[in-house]
Structures are given as structure tokens and as C-alpha cells.
Amino acid sequence: MNVPDDWGMYYYSCEYCNAQCHASEGGCDCSQSLIAESDRPWLEESGYDFDGSTWSKRVRGKIRTARRDHKNSWVKKGDKYSEVIYRHISDDSGESYHTRGFRLVK
Image (cartoon, rainbow, N blue to C red; front, side, top):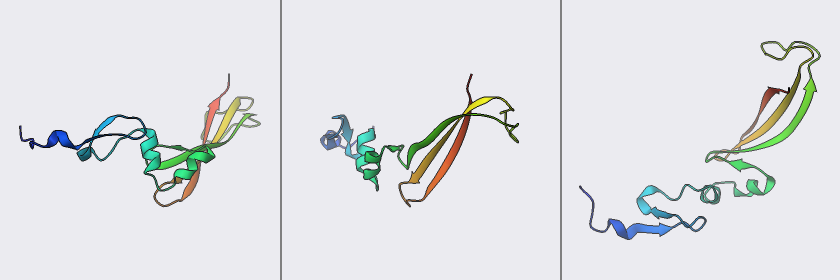
């Protein structure tokens, strides 16, 4: 193996989860460490979740009854469905966008 003699000297404990990490690995990948190293850590206080590149938060959820068949969808007239809207914020640029999802309610 081609391992330097001082390989064992560069370990440290993550200040958030106390996991052993090596300096060559680029840091710990626990959620608190990712949030601390992000560009917008204050978003966690507002209820956003961070996946490493994007902050996401559910902003609205509602149960509805379809009044008509939805175009290009499996939702038909009379079906009950839940509509959920998420807001996503890019950690790098700060740009935001919304996504909407549907699920049948039985």
C-alpha cells in the first residue's frame, strides 16, 4: 500500500456529532455540519430542511375535492386529493422556486 507514515495524525472529532473524521475526507457529512458550512444557515430557524445544496420547506398543504377531471393527471372528478406546495431555495445563489405535488386521499 502507498500510505504515508503520518496518515493516522490527521484525524479529528466532528464538533457536532463527535464522529471521527480524517482531514483528507473534506469534513463530516452529518446534517449539523452541513448546515454550519452552508451559505444560509439562518434558514434552519425558519423551518427549512437542508440536503447539502437546497433548502426546502412545506409552505402549504390542503385536501381538496376535484370539481372536474384534471388534464394530464390521474385526478378525476369527485376524487379527494391532497395538494402540497414546497418552497426550495438554492444555497449557492439564493434563487427560489416552488414545487407542487398531488396524492389521492382514500
